Length: 365
Image (cartoon, rainbow, N blue to C red):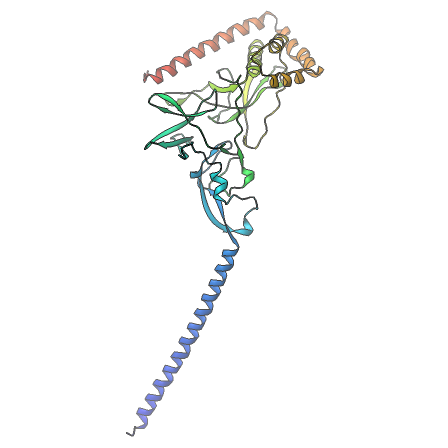
């Protein structure tokens, strides 16, 4: 059938339009395919360049126990990850805080943003506490202490870290709190404390004389602040001390009381997990030294360290030239100062004890 020129022209235009559309569609498909291939290639390259690494999902303080719930695994660029980054779950699980039954110990924060450890046993949640005298972990169950036998040594943070910090081996350390037989929890209420001191902080106790001489009495002690009616006490702390450290503290307190203008105070470690303990420098008096040398409760290792510390002439010279002379200069006033300050400390201790017992009994003034 013959077609007129107009029909033929319309048909040719339609075919030409279809051809152009097919060509454009082909080009678009080709471009999309190339982009898809490039994207796939790039993803494969990124995958090859990526590794799994653990990061913190919350802020952590220096010296705080690390539990598994604090960590989240993320995929990060291999080039941005140190070679000592912790990415293997076995590295965490090996030291994960668990009891012998395999129950995980995890971290929660109270209203004061203080980290506390918890465990679920028999369908119930219990707060995990650490006994000050022994450093053993326990839970309060049926008004009794049920001690937890852990399957590993806890990991602690060496430094304070913020959320999303990449975990490396240098940032963690194994807890090495080995408690000796002569360690006891001691209570002190006469120390000048840092304004921001919290439970879990580490301190040195120092004595400063009116002459400006400043000595370290005991070093790097973890602080526990008692609570009365749920509120931290203002002037009382608990610290664990060995027998020789207890006697050093007693000597320093007595002499701080005798010397008008002397101060016995605490200084806080900024990064307790990383910083080594300072070396005590306070030279005790002769009577305390004699007591130390004849004290059967002091362990042999500590006794050897004390003998080495006081065997040099520098310690005796410091003692004689600065501390003894300062006390002598006080004359009879030294004894008056001692009696007044000691009585004040005893009164404060009694009042704090009463407030503490009243809080346990639910008595509110």
